[in-house]
Length: 436
Image 1 (spheres, rainbow, N blue to C red):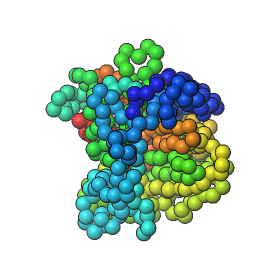
Image 2 (image 1 turned 135 degrees about the vertical axis):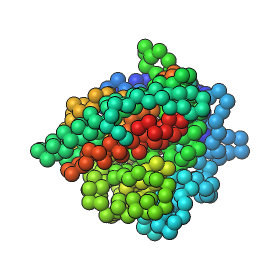
Image 3 (image 1 turned 90 degrees about the vertical axis):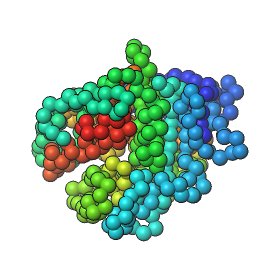
């Protein structure tokens, strides 16, 4: 387990020098006497923007008494966690990934954890992770709703209005039909204001309880001038890249359906994803780009020919798990993450044109949404995940983001509905379900 009670150092990196800044911070921590230091950080969607705090904390690696990486929430501080005990031991705590397709198709009820449905012989691994900073802290009508979770009410305002988002999707489809743009991911936000402060610890705990197999994180991303500490909180289903020794793993996701909890409807959604030309093409763009980038660094690379279907409590996703190996002196986890970011799963193809299209069509700056959050150690090992299913929390406010991939033939109403479904992860944890 990693505890945020070591030597803390706030270091801002810029595009191209973040890995060097992280290495310098680690070396400084060693000189200061920190044993096994780790840097954690977040990178914004636009790597050259102000939202690119790379080292919000330099922390010591702390083992629990008796060894192992058992996770806990320490009183007064958030945790920095690695894989769950079930993952480390290979055991089954009832909350990890499991084959879900047959269960759904046979009428079995999912257990609520992150699940995988696909070919035989799939891995059954709990990829839970938590990363924390040093502080805790679908209609087309105009929407401004008050919702109650038993303790506080919320005012919820969409940014932009749903009909404006749908029009942006229409414009993106036209651009794809007219020129070089092949895919663009368009996002929208929800601004929530409560009657009392948002508890980051409770929110993180509820996200982990709802989906223990997700990559959960809470990172202090406070900036000068913020009226209250600002925390990036989420439970991402998408591993961008990890490195452990010479083993490199990536798990791109693209192509989605809402998960309903009804076995028959979920079985239909899984079946549709497996044959949907639109979703398969969208997923292929992402998987191919990730494989191409990793292929520049890996001496070996295993890329499955077909995606599987992976489930979270809110969604079904097409998923490809890519594995490779790097040679001695190979790139660190952070260097690999920077080379991969942004993938077509959160940006588009071609990347530069998609990013410019996003800047033109999205009214709100994404900040850390669709960026990266993760950690790296002295050996270059680490884990970086895509910051989706997340919110930026400050005082009584929370800003949530969700996006959908737009390709040729995309339907604006369907893409709007997909973003609403993706908001569900955070809205349920905040007690504001139905706001999207």
